[in-house]
Length: 167
Image (cartoon, rainbow, N blue to C red; front, side, top):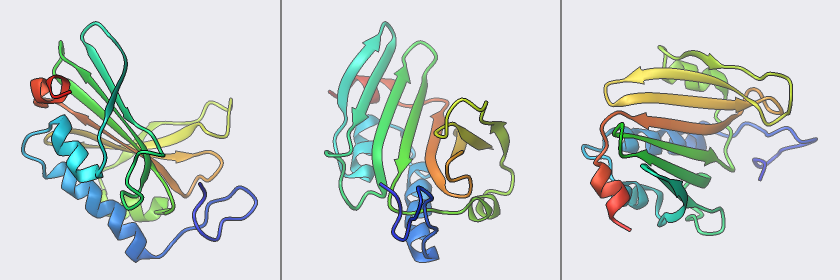
């Protein structure tokens, strides 16, 4: 769903107050002392459902219709690798459009970690910043290159039992 004021497939940037909400959510995730499925669900305001996993990889998702309308995200995926003790949380940003300059201002150590290969307008340019707990990546789709479209957090040492075990 494009941000309010979007025209011709381009998402419109929104006020800093609406952008602040997204960054407040990101800060809340960063401040979690124990990364667990239930903790993440609490911050998002919706419950994950398990989707097809493989071996030591647990996959969970929250669809757009199940996510709280006040979450600031249209969907969320959580992947947990019990073997490497790594969890990946991907949040799809909706209804807001924090600009690239705002993200880079707030996260000055972010560097380009991925770029579109020219195959689709949904490919992203990604900026990643290393954190004590892991990596934080911001994605900007080719179709709206100045509009934040996703946030990915790779947690180094989540509570794997809490994430995978609390079904």
